[in-house]
Length: 121
Image (tube, rainbow, N blue to C red; front, side, top):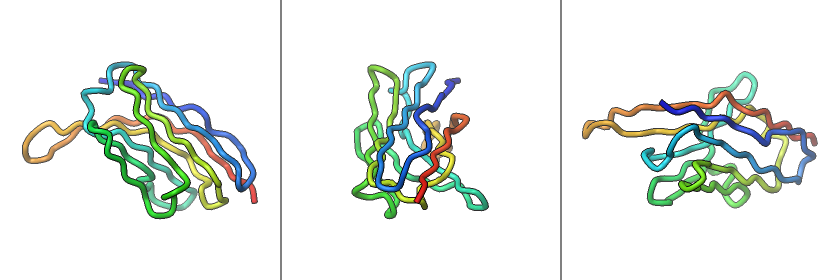
């Protein structure tokens, strides 16, 4: 088990920046993927950015070039640097830790409680 606690959400003007952080209660090195998801009102939760244990990252198209995900195994944190924020980035952002547990791809997922990001236009 691991607990994930997000921080850094805030109200910011369009064009501004925020850095979200997710602190894990235990080692994150055992997780295959760490990711940030978001959920806007009335919408499904979507993957924003993910980073593998090897450091490979991927992003949803709408944030490419604006967001960067960082993984620090020594500090057991995963962060999301968000620049050039837009009103459509407004959502609750969730931290996710995923570990594959067998060769068939079954996995275990842990989630934080979320942090609110509001971008005013």
